[in-house]
Length: 179
Image 1 (cartoon, rainbow, N blue to C red):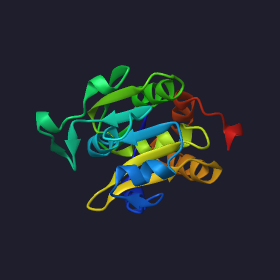
Image 2 (cartoon, one colour):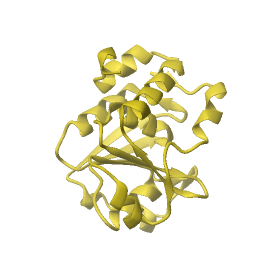
Image 3 (cartoon, one colour):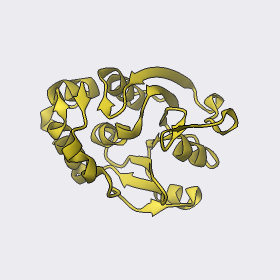
Image 4 (cartoon, rainbow, N blue to C red):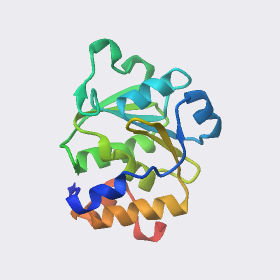
């Protein structure tokens, strides 16, 4: 549905919020729903709480995790498998993310492929007051607070990706009026 052009890659290097190394300190500042993107981030958050939605792919920094380091699926009410190739946002991932955000059950989205870009649509689709947590390689966990400003920035980023941004909005359940 959407592909990340090389020209936009550099924009993803800067964190969208403060970086934490301590999950308890992060959670003291986080709102709900809590959305975790990445295996290591999800594992750290699970030491303190279960995220409302988590996206994992069984890898960290593109290296497969050992079985004993994988996220405990039993911590979640619902486990959903989705396909999402590297450097893309598939319609399946977007639709399942939107579904998980609209459900009261703690949902683990297990991604076949890569979940690295999922923080972008998570911020775009989550309600104001939510928190999206993702990894900043070599630094820690980024806490992105969802508000009209962060949402607008992510929607604008989606618009600049290659593919079908309008279809992506539909899959996420986002109408233009929400901006």
